[in-house]
Each structure stands twice: as structure tokens, then as C-alpha cells.
Length: 258
Image 1 (tube, rainbow, N blue to C red):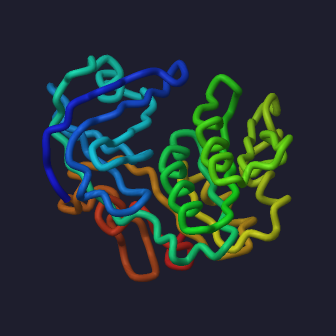
Image 2: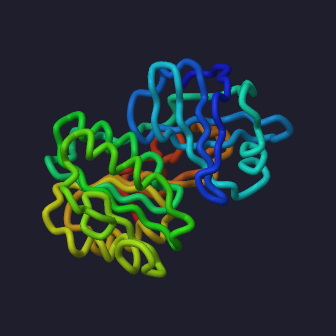
């Protein structure tokens, strides 16, 4: 974990409630996809944990949804604002276990960490497939960015769309891609070697019923301190309670007690 000052270089809306913020500063503490940062906002007692969507040597890209006072305040921060940020938090995904054809599943605001993970898996020579789950077409974001990763690597077949992949979309109302949930797409993909996912717990429990391989779950939890001191975000595992912020947010399928 490292604390530092970071300048906002962009803060833009992707949908009516989802925003992308790019921060400029030291990224050396970020070592794995799936880690998160903790932002200090003026007037707020607790920091706001946000998963890392992507990063470079000098920038961190965050995607967040406005769901309360903190994230609403974030959406109004102008370019040039300097924030106190804790970086390098959490354990992130372990790509060494992925096999050649991993499946990445992101639901709603669980989509952002899948982007960096997908980028790294492709760089490792793997052949991932991605499922993005949304309720309505108005909520969809980053579909084209994922497709660009596959196109740049020569892995995007001509004519591939949101139903045929390698980047699939599931919408609850069926207006884009496959009608239903991410698990409805999973049932038609039988050759994946491992899975990685991030999203809400109800989605995880549905995945648990249909998944045919081992995998890693990245939990979205309300956090107090964000670095393991308060035990406010614990999860039951076969090895005792684990803190989502410190021991997670990524936990392996076999250790979780549902």
C-alpha cells in the first residue's frame, strides 16, 4: 500500500450514472489486475474504495457508479483537482491459474477490473472470452474498449457481435446480445479452462450453480478502513473469516463458504 497525491486529468460520464476518472501520479504500488484504490474526499469521513480499471506508468483509470453522496461528489470534481489516494490495495487476480481459455464475467460496476485482466491475459498469450452483464442498453459501457483489445491482438473474428463474442453482452431485457443474465451466456460456453468474475453476490451465487471449472471471485463490499484494520468487510471461508479489503477482494472458488 502506498499513499500519495494524484491529480485528476479527466472525469467524464460514460452513461447517466457511470463515470470514468483518470488520475495522474505514482502507480508503482499496483501490481495485479483486480486491486483497488481508496480515495479521500473533502467532507467525507470514510475513504471511497474504487477498483482499478487500467493503469500505466503515470496514470490510473477508475470507473465508478454514482450511488451515494461520495460518488456523486466524485462525479462533480473538476480536472486539476488533487486527491489523497491509497493505492496498491487488495490482492488482485492470479492469472497463473487461468489456463489457455479463461472466461471473464463482469456484472455492472464489476466490469472495470475485467478490462485490465483481459489486457494482461491477452499479453500472456491466452485466449480469453468476456461476458458483460447489464439490465438495459442504456447501462452498457466499455463494450467497444474490450473489442478493441481483441482486435489489436488479432483475436476478433469478422462479424463477431455481442451475442457471438469473444465479448458477449447479456441484458435482462434482451435488447442487446443475449436475453437474460451472465449465466445464460455461460451455459453455452463449455470449453473455458478457468473463470474470473467481479460483481454483486447474487450474480456470484448464480455463477456458482453453473460454473464447471475453478475460478476467482472479486467481492464488492462496503469497507470501513480499506486496509484490514476494522474487520468490517469479512467473508466466511474454509480458513476462517477473511477481510475483503486485505485478504481479498479476490478469493478462490474452493475456499468460499456461501
